[in-house]
Structure formats: structure tokens, C-alpha cells
Image 1 (tube, rainbow, N blue to C red):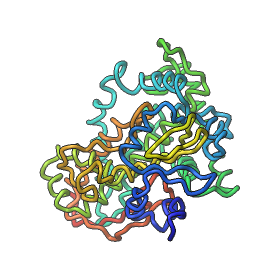
Image 2 (image 1 turned 90 degrees about the horizontal axis):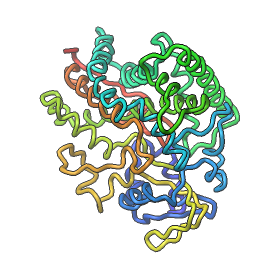
Image 3 (image 1 turned 180 degrees about the horizontal axis):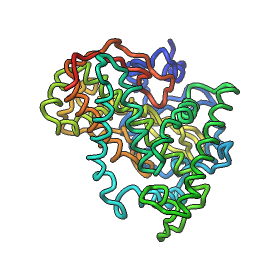
Image 4 (image 1 turned 135 degrees about the vertical axis):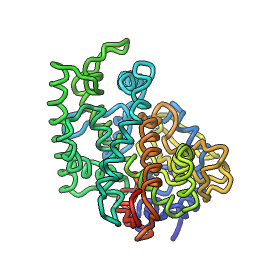
Length: 409
């Protein structure tokens, strides 16, 4: 293949199981522009990190529209405004500060850490539910229901409504794939799912206005700090973001993690013997097999010089995080899974003002999940390698992960 086909190779489903040879090829041209109307592909760790902090790079949906990327631009068909991850300062900063007030420091400094016991209880119940089975799909039986349960409880979604979310979330996530222009039917299904989810959440918001509770929706609705208050539409947009981003990446992180540990049984055994190793394992997973492979929603709002290339104002940029995470200029032996690395400053959660809002929760969920799977499953082994992957080039992870084991501990 010629280098001109690199964008298609990255988004080609045939390469989903192992995209890393493609990323190695991509790094040979760290700033790659294949077609006049196509995006600039950035694959070097240091370049990606710098651009994530560069105010000349915009996340605003309006700028994406001006750059000709209607897939990620404008308000949703639901009428919801863009979430704060698709805005620039100062509006981005205002909305993120309000949202963060209900999620962590300084107003809720222990909200995430205090969940450890409840997370362990949820995981224990899920593993106990395997019962007499000696073969399970880790995705369907464990990695999907765990973070969905957690984010629903944080927001204040009634437990009996939690199963409804998969029917809404799956088509929404599928519509985010940058390599797949949706058909008219799939686009309609995704928008219908957004509308149903927004209408459902609106009902919960109206309840929280009348009867505040100890949950994130109540905090968002009733926040009256120095940044003012969110409008109802901003609350709904933020809640949809938290539900989608709050579980989809964690599903993939847990599944990628279990797959990687089964491919590296020495670390699976160490995790069983040393539960605290989960912290290092999760950080190395975020470098080695990140659930978010690339960031396509960026636009230059000024000319940028990078490695002798002028990226003109108005150009679209794709930051290929997974390529940067295995950049040999930054990491020694980048193709080796090594939780004992002394320095794992990965790009798995991005960087800069748009760094992952839910990173502390995703870290803790994955640490608990992998530790308990390692402890409870006796002699776990893969039944298919590579497993079948999801279509999505942006949020990469197995669609199923069939694992056999001898017994439950």
C-alpha cells in the first residue's frame, strides 16, 4: 500500500485487532497530510502532548463545521447544545468547573475514593453470578454491566432503569466512529437514541429540582457557585456526556486489560499475589492498549508550524494517541507490556484542559475489576485470540472476550 492510504488503514476494520504496526508506519511521517481536504495526522508523543496544550487548537464544534467536518459539528438533532468537551474556553472552563464540583475536589474530594467498597461489592456480585459456568464472555457478563451500574448510581439513575441504557448507548457510540460515515438508517437510530436518553434524563432532572438527593444530577441542577448555574439544556448535555463517556471507555479498558493479562500470565499471577500491583498495571494498560485510540475533533484556529510543516488555519487535526503511546522517542521498548516501568506518563486520558474528566473513577474501577478477576478466576484462559473487535476506530476494544476457567475462588 502507498502512504496515501494511511488514513484508510487506520480506520480499516481489518486492522482493528492489531493497529500498532500501522501506527509504527505512521510515525515515520509524524505530521502526515494525505489529501487536500483531509486531516493532518499527528503521531509523535511530544507533538501530541504539545498540541493538547496549545490554545491554537480548537475543540469547538462550530470550528469543526467551518473546517468541513459536519460529523462532529453543531447541536444534536435532539436540540441539546454541545457538551463541554466540544467547547473552548472560557465556556468550556465554566461548565467543566461546575461539573467537577459534583465529581471531585474541592467540593466532593472523597466522592470517588469513597466508592471503593461499593465497587468491590458490585464486582463481587457480578462474579458470583457466574455460578457454575466455566466459560463466560467477559464483556457481556462483567466489563459492560460494571461501569454502567457505577455511573448510573453516581448520577442517580434508579437501579431498575439501568438495563435500558445499553439500547440507547450502543447506537450513540457507533455513530462516533470517525472511519465510518453512518447510513441514513443508523444515523436515525443514533439520533433517536439520543432523544430518548435526553427525554429520560429530563424527567430525572425535573425530579431533582423538586427533590434534591445525594447524587450528581442533583448537584448539577442545584449548583450556585461563582460560575453560576447550568441551564436545563446544559445539565442534560453534561449528563448524556457522563453516561456515554463514563462507561464506554471503561468497558474497553477493563476488557483490554483482561486480554493483555491473559496474554502475559506472569503479570496475571503477580496481580493475584500482589493486589496493589493493579495501580501500575492500569497505568501501563493506558499506555499499551488505550481504549481511546485517537482524537479527531480538533481544528487549527491559527497557522501552526510543526516539524517544518505549516498546518494552515482552519485545518482539521487527528491526534493519534495510541501511536504516541508507543513512540520510541518517549518510551524505552514501547512494544513491551511492562507495568514496572519507572515512568508511564501516557496519553491514555489525553492531556491539557480536555484531559479525561472521569479519569480517577475509570482508574479505580479498572483496578478493582482486574484485581478481583485475577483473584477469583482459577486458571483463566482465552478461547479466541484475537477476539472479535468492535467496529469503532476511535474507542477500541473487543466486542466479546470468551474466557474459560476451572473454578471460582
